[in-house]
Length: 321
Ligand code: SF4
Image (cartoon, rainbow, N blue to C red):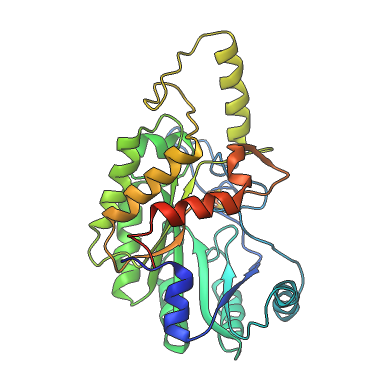
């Protein structure tokens, strides 16, 4: 059986561990023009699905202010629901290993040394793991576990170019190897339903991750979500316009066109298929998207989170604990 993140944490710490969404103040090289397209044009818009908040899986509740203040605010939000005592310090938005290394080291050292923090989790890009970052992560990992979340989304190079990921698969492979050799826990994000991707493409990505050596520690699966204000939202509007004027032929499930949104049954079946492919040691951190309600355009069934999670629980009954 695979473990859901909540089960893994409960087994390891003997209590429920909550995530505190925090901000490191970093930006992303895919947004500040540091990455060049093959024709030499700087990438400034980020991945086309990425919202203003710079979040790979859209769940951040970033607050401003000093880190202690952020932690206090985030704990207060959680304390309305629980009396949790220990937390994951979760820096999710943007690329949290991209910036002045001494500032980052000071910030993360302060956080990881707090009694109430049991894990430091940093979302970043594989091209933001250089030697100085690695040395910092190794040092922090001696204090408490450090998790690195990499937004791979797909192994299909063509898809990655389309959504402006800004790095090739070989960059991920190098970073993965280096991080694992350094003893860091690695979690990978995958988006199911990227433009033009077929079910076979999506399963290919998951099969690739399932055969990584050393084995992948954790995975976040989510469906593509179109959020207002993103570049992909404009692509989506253009696609709808073309579909209206019948320039595109919709072939459900085949993706001969740009967008195809799985319904809930189709998506949850696919998630179960993906989980079954992964080694049982890979912890399942996420199974669905969690876009901000006010920005979400498609697919709207994801707003009924309870129904989606109940369906996933039912379909993954024999796979997940
Ligand atoms: S790498 Fe992450 S933060 Fe940067 S543009 Fe892509 S999704 Fe957004």
